[in-house]
Image (cartoon, rainbow, N blue to C red; front, side):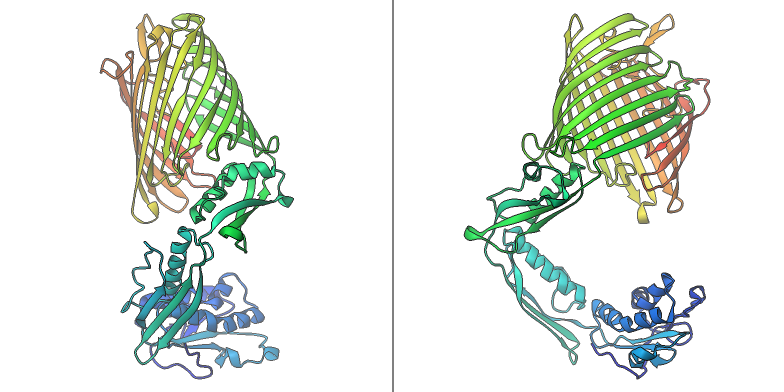
Length: 604
């Protein structure tokens, strides 16, 4: 690349203001773009990479700042031209008409009016020779890194990175370049690239060393959680996954795994974990409101690294249905959960929990105590399985009378989450299947409860401006009779989680004489169209429908109801604030009019 100083470039210029790329220092808003070069894409790239323009945007417009930016502009514009395949361009940087490099450092002007960039990009270069050798088996270099393709500098870096990664993926952790020949042949307008690699020895993982100066977590726990496979061949994926396991505990503010500089005897390489603890305690609050269900308030207290092994102890409290007009009264719950990472292998999380609650629902009143232990096994980034054993006692009053339930439960859950964002998904899908067999004690009937929840998201247009979302739910109760099943296990439909526009849990099983109870079968379907209006504001149109039946599986003998409405979304740093207005469109007029729902995150 040639940088010509003190001589104006000939033809094929791009300019800003009246004479080149001119940036009035004191009035950024008055910049007028007048570009002469025919390559529109290149003009925009050069303009967007300008150091002087960046200084203006950041309001660094003192003469000394602008002069420093002008000097840096030579290198920035040269690098930008290289990145686009131009290796014989000419760059002039004029400060009030004088070449910036010619201005003595001790005689910087007190005032600068105009900075002008004059660029002659020259001809495009193409790859002549394009080689990186040797390559590991299966390595794929960038598609455009080949003879005859446009010789963008970034492709050379990408090709070297791909070649090095190919060897590292096979365990050659210390692969490095030994000879780099990159030659611009101006007469041929060609760039010849010849790069040689030395893969070095195939390396095995050694010990995981821990820098304990910034953490209170036991070194043995960090090693157990990371699960770095000592003795196995080095793998960048294994290193990344070990770091992710440490991050998923929520105990650490930062996690870095560093390779040892020296490979020891038998080609064994130690790694070092540098972790910084999060603040040990955290408290949070939540709120959600519906015009019929009323207000729901929740809070939690969290203690990280509870006993020194990156454990998490969390206490949750919730009061719901405050001011409800949908029947029933307020619900209360208080629960505690202790999570212990890596109890049986690095990917297995153990937990113990206890919960007391009072649910005053439209069809029943229940006081419940539940406690249990379990484990969650993570099979991949998206798939996990959970199993537990728990005991549940419930004292219940409903239209079937006063009853007590004493159950030993064996809940199982399989979750596959491929969404791009949990609170505001725009693409991907989510699937969860739950099966909870329960054994009745003290005269309670035995049975099982199943539930599936499937969600899918499709975005159309730029920046996910249009999102189509769908949800399907299905649940069943097997084994226990309708009048011998814990009402908390039975299904109802209506409200924010099932059918918006219908009153909360308004669809159930009619027992006659004005009595009702939940059903043993449930089907729910929802569809949404989400449209972004601005970066922060969006609108939603939605329709929901739900089915409740007395039988264990759907047989058409139950009842359907539906609702539909419109909503607003306001995006925040913690997720979109949801405001939905919906009314009933099927299943009879409830007489309750429209429903209003406010919360954080999408409805599903």
